[in-house]
Length: 81
Image (cartoon, rainbow, N blue to C red; front, side, top):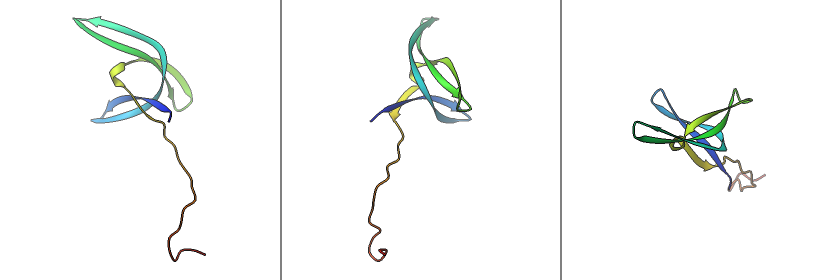
């Protein structure tokens, strides 16, 4: 099953997952003895305007891609026509 990358975003005391496209560019930032790793991702504004930005690697999570499955099923006893 395919995986989809999401960015975890904390807004109004709730975690949201925004779908992102992970790009093959990373960077490390060293400040005050701490090292933070970032990865470049592509997002879309309003679903169709693409833009890129740097996201902390710890805020990128992977889940199975959403899907819908249609299949024939039995309606149960008494519901048959």
